[in-house]
Image 1 (tube, rainbow, N blue to C red):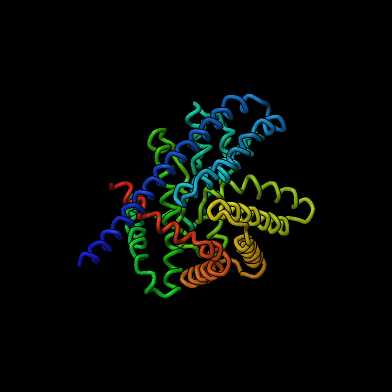
Image 2: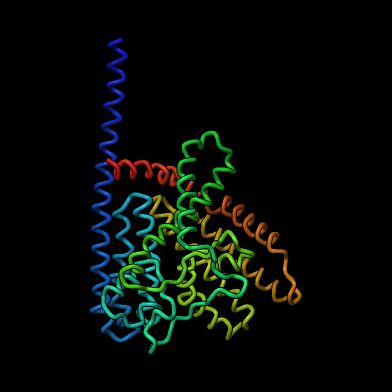
Length: 374
């Protein structure tokens, strides 16, 4: 009896020590997270006061190169999925691309901000201001609006947000029973988790700018599960923050250049493929920050496949489909979602699953709950 008691006591002691180590690790991660963002904000202050005073072009770009380098290395200080992932996305992708546009007086940062806080918010957060949020005497950025038939949802935003939070919580709880689930069901949960997690994180990060400064912000997602085509999904529904930053940095200039040589049809296709290629490479870079292992380029091939199919879809619509004729929405939605899920299972998720990023992300939820409660 005493031996059994000692064994239980030893197990309990090991669990307590493990919990204490995890809590210490979380505290250290939060401290590094704060330090990273203090550094990033300091860099953006430099951009606002120093770089903006230089003429657009080479000299402004030259002044921004040290900041772009710092943004590339800062996320290496973070190891957690939920702090390192968003930081990498915001600094390495969004902020870097916004600053590249800013060096040529283009993009959202080229519009004079009333103060430095507006500049920092627009540069570092996943937000794109609506046209009427810019000063009336300035030109507005070239943001493509959703076309007729692709309107934003009419359900109350608060209700929809609460529903998504509940669904995400149910998915996280369901992971406790993964061992008894079919792999296809786990894949479906991962797809829903990725969408809901990204949308809620982006919405939470954009909320302070909306509440403090009263910014009117472009929607970051437009219910991608309602997509009727690949063009609809990637161009008008999925992660519109990325769409709005890739359009002026990659798509528009390449389409403008190539159209002069190969015509508008081929120019559009080349611009689409180049945009998907850049998106794939940026996702590959984010995967590297999360897994810290050399890339296998599967995710790049995933986006290239999406680009080829989207370009073919656009060309087919123009050449083959009679005016006014469309597939029934139920059929087109099913085909699009099935294609995205199948190709995602084939090329998008393997790097994450192979390197245990899914298990790492799921395990962090329990750590964060214990850290917040206790």
